[in-house]
Length: 259
Ligand SMILES: [Zn+2]
Image (tube, rainbow, N blue to C red; front, side, top):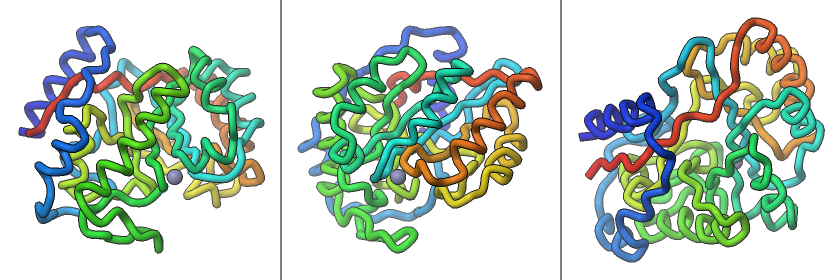
């Protein structure tokens, strides 16, 4: 079922189908009821239903930046503007609170797409599983709240409904993945971890991005201005462009359904 839906979405993207938000396929209360008590069988960052690559047309890669909590890395944004590099910014409610007025301005940029990074910024589980010491959501209703509260806030602030979701720590169980998709969003994973949670020095960021393959989704962070991320990307981006690479937004998932 997953493969059929994903293949359909890929074909639609390749044909240049219009990028439209299909709206929730279930309303939030319905999603919470439907998945209540369902036992997960998988846990991790990669599983069916999580998109981690895209069909590239040559040397294309996609940059995604997580805004977890804390500050905004203005130097990194300036680099994106300077080289006209598009990116998906995954914004959570904690970051919105810490950076008032920011997400509205970022959403107005034609280079940037806003993704949903959750409300409390916790891993997405129906059983409270932990990742990197952070306790995840504990039930289907919790998952719905983590996704939908921030979704509504982003719609209110930006006038657009994000189509991509990324959980804090990028960890999910398979029931949570189904819930995200049931609400009309698609979990976006990654193939290249560029800044290792904003702990990597600039040279490591640069060499990680240099290992990208066509269709790779790169993850880095927007919320650590004192990290090596901005300097690393500041070196990697012109080097990749010189090497014939193109940064693109990942093709919209369309209305892929898995249930
Ligand atoms: Zn995060």
